[in-house]
Length: 311
Image 1 (cartoon, rainbow, N blue to C red):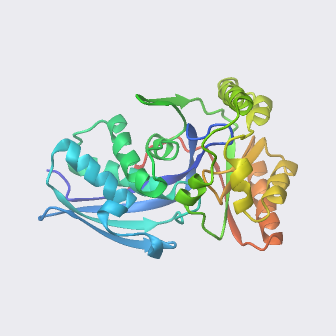
Image 2 (image 1 turned 180 degrees about the vertical axis):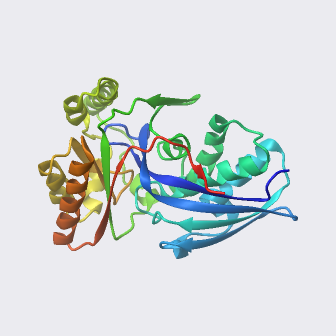
């Protein structure tokens, strides 16, 4: 007998990772969103919200990342099943750590389970991307893929979609620090240049290759040298008060590298121990405070698991 309801938790994620604009992301163990889904007799999706800063998120399924992801999945499997969906936000919207992707990932995993798994987990990605497009204005997978699959993901190609799992070195840890203000993803994308100089493109390609090789060989020095963004950070840094000093505080505290997570305002840093990751978080919070912003730090291992079915 199939269940009529399910609760699923999906975690936050860090996208771009400095050198991998729109093509690299990794999952972190916390924070996360919890999505509760219940079958209903009539067709359609009803969405309700609670949690951190949920008031700004639309509940119309066509304009909600989880709702749109579910609609995309139902269309593909030709199902008229209706659902009540409650999204408990643990990840603030507009934070830069995959808030919209976490909701979409939990939603498609939960609905797929309630429909007796008509799709493989790998087939859920395109529906999560459809949901993510509501927030970002385009089909991007560097948050939704890590949220769905865990670990560190490389999107080698979007047409056709080609997703690769990269190795996670044993001693690699993440710090994500969320200042208490919002950067709109659409606005952050609009400020990027339509073209980049050939020299920058070549350098960025080298950084991405170096970062990928560094993961394979657990070469943290190579990772650090490769974590330079020539595409987005030079423009987005001005959106974040205190960015240079916060980044420098992380490097001084022992970070392998530090940059903007996704479109910001969150910053992330990588390090080689949990103790250092926690110390980096404390120093970054202090640097944000000097810039006039409250912030919250999350220091965790790279999260390797897909969304968790709670019950």
